[in-house]
Image (cartoon, rainbow, N blue to C red; front, side, top):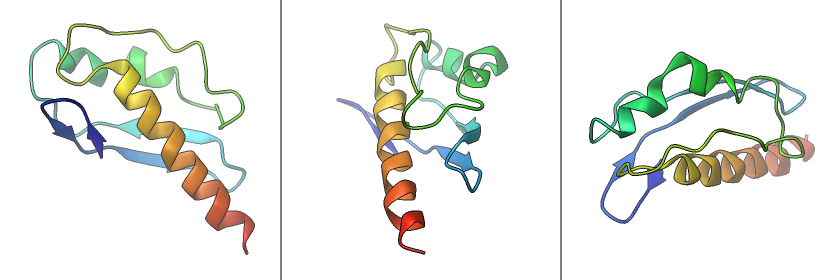
Length: 88
């Protein structure tokens, strides 16, 4: 989940076995500006990226949940995946 100053948003991150992002899903958003985080174009920026290549994602500001909040959470989830997957 993504936590901002005033809200929490659930994220579903789909990752392949090599640690590359397949898709990012945001089931709901708390306000109209945050709804831009649900656009197909914005979410497609993550496809094929990994912990080492996760950059150059367009910013969306002014929302309760910002693109920076989502990026921080996606990076944290990729680190958890990397740590746990490498143990196998």
